[in-house]
Figure 1 (cartoon, rainbow, N blue to C red):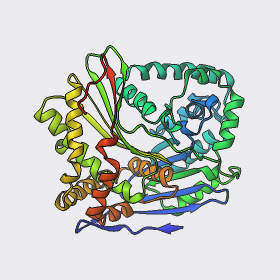
Figure 2 (figure 1 turned 45 degrees about the vertical axis):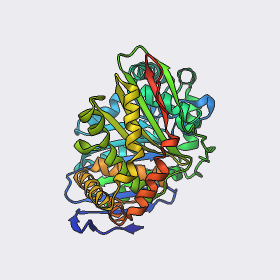
Figure 3 (figure 1 turned 120 degrees about the vertical axis):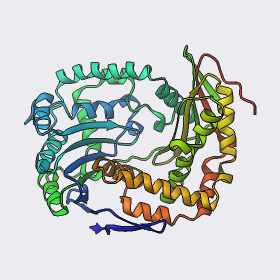
Figure 4 (figure 1 turned 180 degrees about the vertical axis):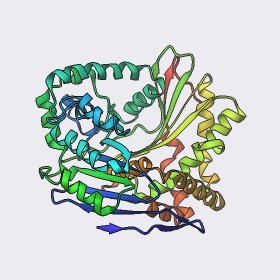
Length: 432
């Protein structure tokens, strides 16, 4: 077990965040992380499973997503989703779940006095789900509805189709929603086999954040998850991706505007220091009123309304995406390319110092939110297999050498390796 201090230094200022973060492992291999926050009146409970679309076999595409749905649809003690919801809703709790490329997670939040109820319901859902065949067939209809909704979300469609092209259909580019045909063929026995493989304690983390002390949280974790059968973690190795560096691709769609996604990536996982450096660089490109992309493309040229810049982290790859849409797509791509070509020059020592204050402020603003803390710890667990607390992260961010930030920029934002994907009425014609 380790414990982190509640005081940390960043950019010559001291902040006090009344929390401690501890980590321990149950005898069955389940990692338990507790972020105790005395300023909160609520508790957030999250179970993270390192199982997502990237690890599915060809005939399993969609299983991670289907199982995420089905683990909320009834247990031996609470036979229906209504029975589960009745206990959660009547205490005013929040419940959600999601599936991504390399993980699925389940969230419960409530006032701290209901902590044991959350542990009870979460453990029951994960360990005792019935996976009823009739319920599964009904849930397939719901998931097909998600597919239809997805197809109408053009920003997402552009991102996902482009990622598939950019990564040569590597497993990290699979849509976490799945493939319609595989979803329709799924049956309870196949889902149970999938669950038995990935839903084992050694492949999961239980993250608790908010108004609960470590002793109490650890006792509840042991009480409700301690009997979870021990099993070895599955093999989650993936082949190395082969990105298409340079060039562009296009998907025809009768949209009034052209949707664009620009990709920059390397074929390995980012280190923790690179992760922090990219936090600063992405913030410069895409955060708030000082976003380089919005200022240049919207405020100065009127080419776009909005944009989004994101770093996407995988176990064996890192991809930065810049997404937007424009009625003048060639001009928009050219303008973004000019920004990227001059990006390292913008990263002076003083600019990097300002960005550290900016990112520190973003994190400081969000850090009192238990859901934010659990989400951050979840991302670190999936990405690095260990936990870096917000306190430690901010300290590392403050100490990051400017030369390292600039070298990270050179590595990840190579204009010669940019790949562009467009969704619209006609293909892009961009000057080389």
